Length: 128
Image (cartoon, rainbow, N blue to C red; front, side):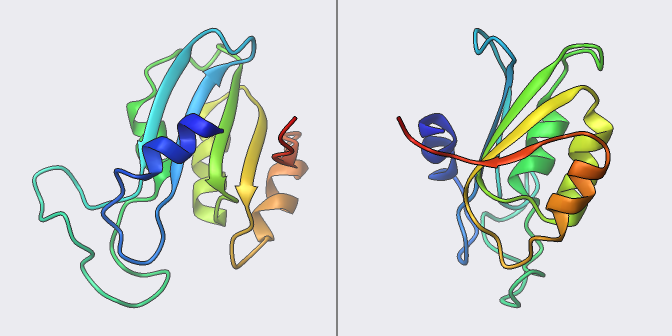
């Protein structure tokens, strides 16, 4: 989770900095990382100021884009904030996500039921 928090610092979103790390289930390999911000080559600013519609790509979305591991590879996802419904769907399509661990709640918890309906447990991070 500390790595997700660190990668979130690269975010260019003015409202909320979010980071995502996708690992193997034995934690030995980082398969992908992502943070929220504008698309590559565009200005490092939000397109709009409207919460939830700033135009930034979400961290989970960028991590899925960056993940070139085969669908068969079992994965854990660590994210600084509970995913939104759209990102939950992206993580479902990534394939073989065994668990999603998040640190902070998001303004909507609708993604939890969706993820759990397809067998992906969603757990709050509990530091040792």
